[in-house]
Image (cartoon, rainbow, N blue to C red; front, side, top):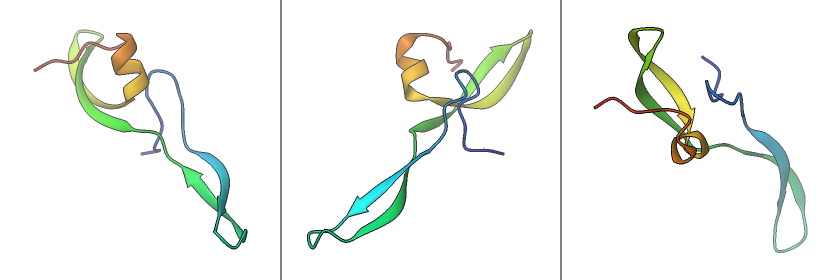
Length: 63
């Protein structure tokens, strides 16, 4: 399973890690994904959803 939001398709971005000595190396900025129970198409599924979608109300969690 890809580390990608099931709603908005966001995934990790690539950037640079810069040390105090100004050495540069590649790194990943990973998004905050939560495993959530959601009712989709009449059935309950567990999907990975980013917190941006949860706060925006694009997904309704089932308890």
